[in-house]
Length: 226
Image 1 (cartoon, rainbow, N blue to C red):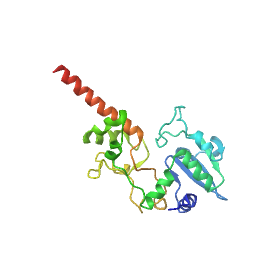
Image 2: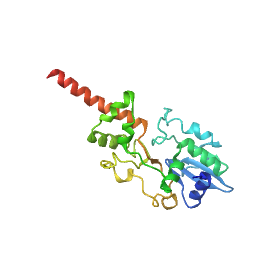
Image 3: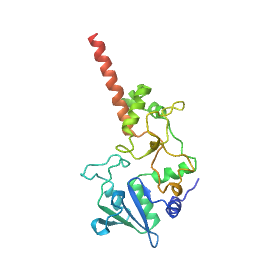
Image 4: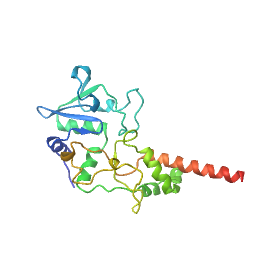
């Protein structure tokens, strides 16, 4: 199915969407926009370093306030102190893809009910090599790990769509960590373009392996001492 994501984004903005992740979106006259960190929304423009064009977003999204590399773009550690001027909705779409790759497209798919959530067990079941160990994670281990590794306030701003398995939902996350169902997820209703997680990321898969290996090393050590 063909989709004009630029037009979709323009419609969301026109209907009141002003936020995505940690970014405040301000429409300007003539199909222009200004982006800022949400915590800088009330600051005078002269106090912020000004950049122009969508490619500048790539550098702004690269590092934290302290200069550390950001491997997870949806982590709540986007640096402050900047404003970005964009001269069209097409530029806005490109810039948002640099800040939050594929998130606008995933939101559009979610609203169309075409985005298929992938259960964690299915994701782990596809792992091979050193990550094949993740298939041995216990349900309770997986529930605890997701609760800590996917924290909305300190780890990742995405809202989860996937369950542990088709028969078992995630049970230890707060309600606000889950994505709302369409049409309640429409940016026109919430004022925000949500960041959605339809499948567990590589960082969570790696953390799952560590949980399994730690348990199995402890069991092996205990058996050797028995």
